[in-house]
Structures are given as structure tokens and as C-alpha cells.
Length: 320
Image (cartoon, rainbow, N blue to C red; front, side, top):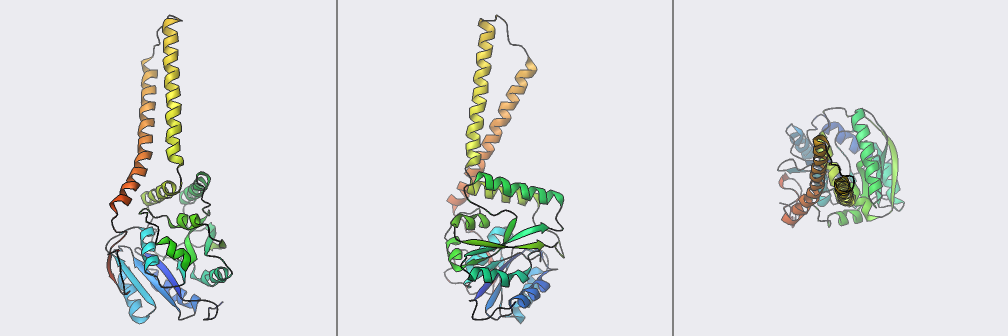
């Protein structure tokens, strides 16, 4: 399936890159072959890579004027790298995809047909995740189902950031001021017409995933705290339950002393109860702290990212 000038406007393909030197050249070739049109741009965002990724991207840019690049001053994280590409894109339609070739560029024509039929967002839904460990599959499946159950926003399950969006969606995204980006949640929050296509996700060809367990955990926290008040309510519920337990223990002690004329004994049971209460308090403080931390990040209002170099002409850029 090929594009032509009649059935699509200018297209921006946004690809964050973190140590993907083994995939970049093949990715570029597959994107170009899939799009088959001169009316597109590929925006590579180098997110602090320590390998030869940036050099390979520059070489591609020197031979293909459609290749643009943004090199960030350090690793700002996947979501902010994607956001940088969204902010600097020129296309009426935008494609967001990863550089590991697990997001097949060959799906772009099908996405375009869907978007042209009246949708604002078309995302790729994974039928399977080949090459991922059982732990990663299980935790990802659990996370998305928990997130969906505790939020009022209908965030699609079994999907990543691979999607095509309209310019209208892009313009709203760059108006959202939150620092802890969770783009797939932000797009779901908009409520515009959305559709999906299904695909079999292949294992990555080269390199290893840049998403460590710590990054996955932080990403999950951004999603939960950004789109759900349930954790804060959970703190309230836990506090109420622990208060009831404490009041019940006091009543029991008083009844035992003055009615049953016996003393409540048991150093071990008291220590267990104190440890339980102390641990619960720390857990609740941690949840509250996560929300406070995100409030502080937004209040400080630092730039979302810093650009070290780019071949894109930037006008009125407040992110540098």
C-alpha cells in the first residue's frame, strides 16, 4: 500500500533514540519504503545515547533531507524525548514509534487509512509480545488493567506509544503543562475518536531495552498519579481502618481492666501492632510524597528538556 499526495498531508514520523545504533539504518530504510512519498519528515530524538546513534543519524540527515534530528543535552527519558519531537514536528499527521523495530513501520499506511476515515488517534494494539520476558509481560498486563480499573480515563490496554495522531491532538498535547508526561494517558483523556489496528510485536533485532525495572516503575507511578486519585483515597481508607483498629484495641484494654479485672499481656503482640501501624504510616506518607513530588516539579517550572544540537530551524523555542 502506498501513499500519494491525494490521500494524505505532510507526515511527521517521531522516533526517540537511546543507544539504538544497530537498528537506525534498517529502520530508516523500512520507514522510507513504507511511506513511499516525499511529503514526510523523520524526526530522530537522540535521548543521551552513549553509542554511535547520533553519528549514524547525522549521516542519514546528510544524505536525506527528510531526516531531522534533535539531540538532547542528556537522557531526559522516553516520554520527554517523544514530546520534544511532537513539539518540533511540522506534519498535519504525526506518527510516534520506537527505534527498536518492534514497532513495524509497515503499519503506517493502514494507520493513515484509519485516520483519514474520521479518527484523531489510531494506535497499534499488540496481539503478542515476542521476545519479552515472562516478568515484563506479566507486570505490563497487570499494570494496564490496574490503571484502567482505578481511573475514569479509558486508557487502551496492551498498547504502547506506537500510534498516529492528528494535528489537533498534537496542539492540545503541547498545551498540557505537566512535567511528568504519560502521553498515552493524556491522549486517552482528550476523548476524541480513537481506533486501533492489531499486530504481532516482534522481538528487537539489536541491542537491549532501555527500560530498566526502575524506569518501568517510575513510568507506572507517572501513569497512576497523573490519572488517578485512588492512591490518595487509599491512604484515607487505610488511616480510617487503622484508627478503628486502634480504638477497638483501646476499648478491649479498658474492658479487660475494669470489667474483666485482667491485664492485657503480650509484648510480642504489642510490637507487631506497633510495627504494623508504623509501616502503614510510612506507606501512606510515601504515596502522599509521590503526589507532592509531582506538584513540586510543576511549580519549579524548569524546561521539559534541553537541546544540545539539531538541524531543525527552531523559532520561539522556550525549551532551550
